[in-house]
Length: 490
Image 1 (cartoon, helix red, strand yellow):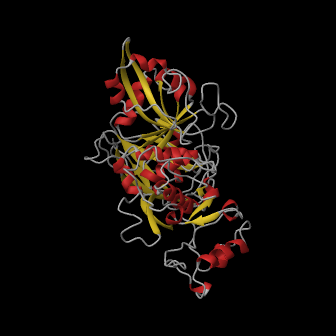
Image 2: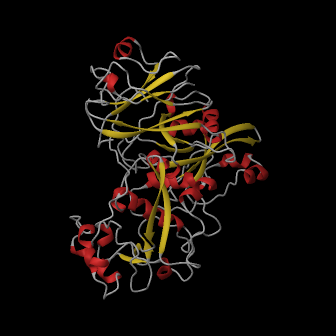
Image 3: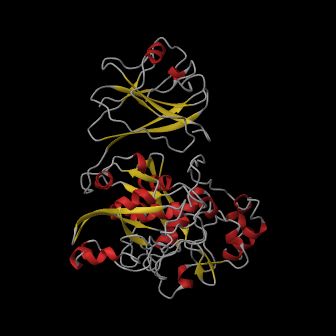
């Protein structure tokens, strides 16, 4: 399920509290959480002494920092370690793949589609999921995952207690009952966001950024160039992760061709396929539900078109005819059935096997009366850093500047037009601006809509060609300004 884009999340780690009372302060939890924790913790251990290395009666790690929600506290829900659910649990079985995902009772398809896209790229997956973890050697009940948060990778440690009903996981699970990497990854991300219920509806591109450190943007498919296969191929060649959705119908209602509205899918491949009658462009799509597939042309169910494709070509495509949530469809039908593509662009490395973007990352601040000038409509726009408080409305403006100049004065900003800028101010977590610029020098100005709003920001610039960035010294005539401009020569 996809959350409204007007809702934003700061993505910060929940605070680590010092006692169980503060951990259980949520109005939905209360004494139920205390009883649950007390049962897990060693009986003779004073609750005041619980710390990050707490172990339960079984001698294994118990993460008392994990925020518990109302559903997890229901009477019929039992928290079990994988070894209690099956005789021989495995962290990963035969490699972590995009098919190791089955959505549970959470409306978090937005997250699962991001995980599925991540699993297509092993070099990206290992950054988030340390593969050396297991239920055998060195097992102590804890698992660690990594997420990218505002310029750096943060480790999140959890225990392996998972909520179950009738010995079945109630949230994300793998089709293989012995495999648990995806379930534990979901739990770690839930801890990062404040609990499982914080995952109930969200934005796929935000999850993709948290798991890659990439830069995301939302593309309207109907506005893309006509050569859509080339657009998708170019994105994938640069290592981009792509999710897609159709938000034109009722929430998660299935249309006559099997596509769900307001539901996140992963786009994992585009191929030019040889048939007996010529070639056709197909895309491979994955529904994180693990079922409910496309039933139109080229589908697993009604796809008579596959009879025109040789067995060798089908093998090349790794096509498997089964109800697993993955299907192929023509690019033409894709453009009709889906409305948006949420794309996460990556800054690659020389050995990544993709054509990387070059990325520069810069931190800055809006400081009231100093560098929080607000929008261009106000008289203080020049005070903004020329390079988040909660729910600030943000935008980006790019202005040309003479190579020998280090900043734009208030008068110059009033006289010059931006070469590209955000179409509107947005309260989303990220504001992305795409443009094609000739070689030259530019200043990038991130701003809030209202002046004198305080917050920190991270500015990232991705280019196909090399670029440099340097702080712009404050204008000498502005004695009250401490603007930290960003001069971006391309």
